[in-house]
Image 1 (tube, helix red, strand yellow):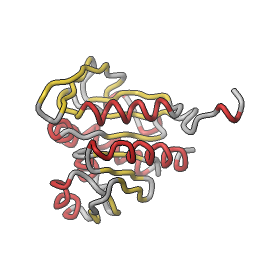
Image 2 (cartoon, helix red, strand yellow):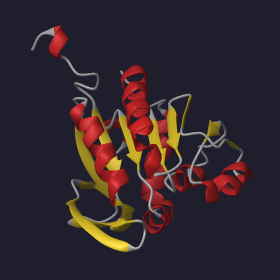
Image 3 (cartoon, helix red, strand yellow):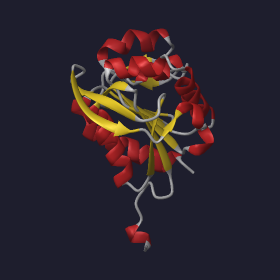
Length: 187
């Protein structure tokens, strides 16, 4: 492959979180596709092996996705970056999972980039990782502020390796910024 054929995330491994049930389909699928299209090797991570069932608009069942590895079976050393999609139920399930929260904390401690959208920043709050400027679904603003973050109402925010976005309508800006940040911040 020539240098001109190289993609921005070639050689990187990105973990994409999914809850066993309740992760927002469009946020999961489009984020996963964006990092794959940019050249990253992608692994779907969850608390349970097998398949995870996503939702549309938090209320309707959507697709099933194969889980590549569980949080218990991986470490921060396995990934160059992480993506945490939203979905109210899915994000709430993920933030209650100690192994998911620990993985997020370990990646941040290693200065590896993380991208999170919609309700996904709940996991960042739980990992004590929001002492910076970020955005999320508006209903999380008090949670973010109470955890020491500066919440702003913007389409996408990148601050010190952390990319956050508000909602599915912001996905184009979110995926563009996460690819750019992952390329710039990863080894």
